[in-house]
Picture (tube, rainbow, N blue to C red):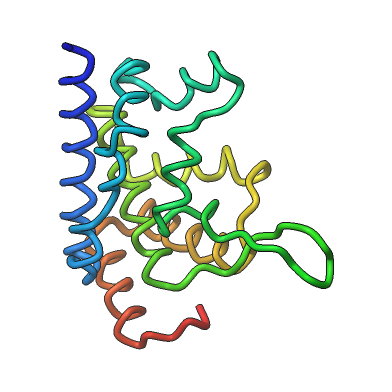
Length: 180
């Protein structure tokens, strides 16, 4: 029961931080719906069972089962994950990444920054989300334009801070161009 409560507090704290970042980015309404699937039985039970406070409970489920039902459920319902944006390419006959809509890339940015803050606590710097992304970049399947935009925003955060980065994001959204 204690692990369930700690997991609940962690995902709620993370969600509230994402909402705050989405507000700064100009997508508050979208932020209000962020990660609600984590409270569903499919995801919450796994989260409570494998909660450690230092890494995703999905890693624990993967270690036990070889895959994570909770993650598959989550990525299939939350459009701010690049893993959601894959589809069958009729030309290559393969499942391939699809370019994400701008508003979901922005939510993904907010999510990554919030997750770094929640899990790294006092060790967080504005460089942390960029370092996390760069460590994973070579092994993930993300559309090249989506990857480039996310990296550009993370580099801006690392170099210029939150205020300038969120101001830039608001300008991007105001222009509302999907050609990023």
